[in-house]
Length: 464
Ligand code: SAH
Ligand code: SF4
Ligand code: F3S
Picture 1: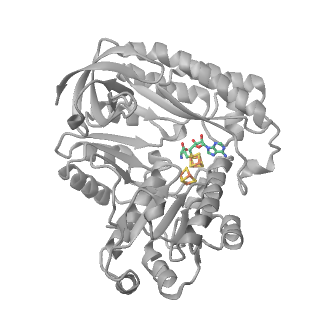
Picture 2: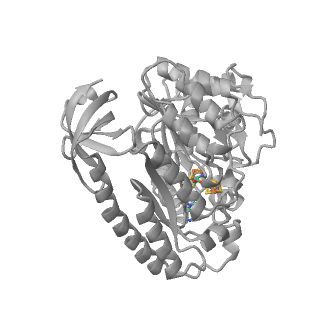
Picture 3: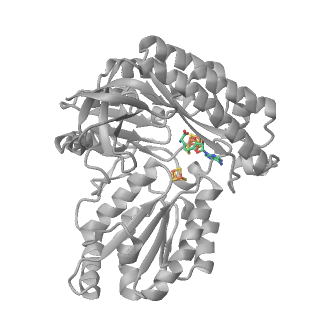
């Protein structure tokens, strides 16, 4: 959907009210916020925006809950265990609230966008004062003002029917060299198992100019890796390939990644664009979900394994280091062991450098929730283990294609466990090597000496 953006740049009346109440309540000191985002990168990015809006109001941030005046849990709804983790955390926070009556606890994000969850929190966790869904960020200052000034409990989960996108939202980013840039919000695909379209609304694309100027600014600030985000970036309303080419033209030494892609919408033109644009990394996160066509149909994925393999083959014919990663669900309602074995065989056939596999989890309100979830969790767990064993064997062989080659790596951190520097290569493979911590945040050439079943081991050649 194409819609005109609105800007959040100007200081609103609500923001000045909030600043006043903050200055009275905290007697001139900066209040401290602890924020944790669960779930996907999109949610992490939303968390960075929430922090940006809080910073404008005068908040500073901390890494531990004990020293916080405001605790924000930015939640995910994609699987049942995501819910359980949040309820567990809310249980723990009750004790903190008993010790510090002034503590404000807030729950936001995808999970509370579901009415029954917001209702449950209202009833069961009276120590939670603010609950807001994925559409409410523009009213954050107003909601927080009401909580602080009137000690009200505020619940705002209404779906915003204004589809415009708020631009110029300030962000407090989690990294100085890797940045997430959302290109589209929402999802229209309604895969039968998935809650995302219900909690994130319909697809909305940001205007290319807004994306390009944000990336240009990030590169100016020294960011080395930009990851474009959307639930299905291939349906970006203004042409995703065109956007990639425009971003590739921005001057500077940086990488562009993106996720996720939907196999039904990936074209050879996308592969050509990735290969032609030197800044766009030769890696595709392409969730397959299942290697069985009947299950794919019942998941409403709208592609088959043949179409998927055509993309893989074409990409590998264009660039031999081309890397694929994927998401897989095991134990979809009615799935037979034979159908699960098709998925295992498919994983071997494609040769993924990384897979994220999940056991099926019934989500209230989705189409699949009406199907009988007939596979026991023990069975699903066994299948998951089988799949991971398969993947471990496959990946070690696959990684050997890199041994002896020199890969460009963005150094991310020095591992506390074994003292190695770690980072991801252009192809998105984890690489470990010895070197000084000062290399963090820079590109290095690393000669690959060995392959493990989760990463490559190498030797530093030079910093570039
Ligand atoms: N938009 C992205 C993924 C969003 S959710 C895409 O289409 O690829 C991330 C992953 O969670 C999905 O790819 C899927 O593998 C998994 N997932 C989603 N709903 C699930 C459910 N009900 N049970 C188990 N896994 C699920
Ligand atoms: Fe969920 Fe499918 Fe949309 Fe991905 S594309 S968010 S799996 S509905
Ligand atoms: Fe992401 Fe979870 Fe929401 S995967 S979009 S945070 S439901």
